[in-house]
Length: 280
Image: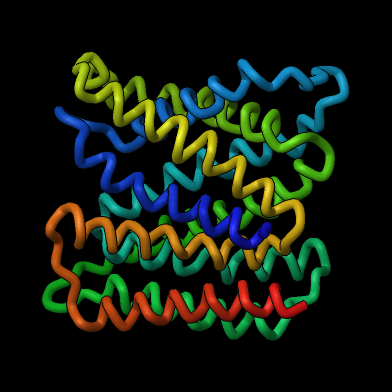
């Protein structure tokens, strides 16, 4: 059940790219991340009535907000240097490794063999999914940005697990993304928010705020309560898989045969992880 919650969260994240194709005008990715966080966090704040400001675990919450804000900033910046394919491969593909290392080094959690097997399958699948040929540009600074993004998502996951051990899921997500929006606001303001004046951009942003932020991260953190952080990040590789499939079936994009092999590997990694859990 908890593994499926995390998996469904990743599927919702995977719809973000397709949704962004409906946005019109000179769109800033950082501004999209800021507004998405503001909507997602703000909506939940309205319903989260259990926030006790004086006893709130601010240290964990601020660290989670900084990590998820840096993840978005580093990830989008890496894409500008290297393109979507390589930026996604390095960021998303490195995150499970960082999650396992952080979990092992800081919280002394022993990594299960089944996690190593499933993560190997999933990461290999991610690389094959976005395999590019020809004159692909690999920028060393872009690689560092992408690795930083993967590390920040892994850190966010580990820190959020500790946060949800202290407070309920809804207020945890609400506070984290409200703080994240505040952190990203200066950069979003600098890059411009005028495109939000177009009515056609409102509904996609509402969807990304509520579905891919509020709902998705509540599911993610809800599942994270009962499963290791490393396993949760591995399951999050369903995000690029979902994005690729939506691109093929709804946007008319083309996938090479290597990408379809990659999809099978990601499916295999997710299946191994979830079936092994069900067998326990």
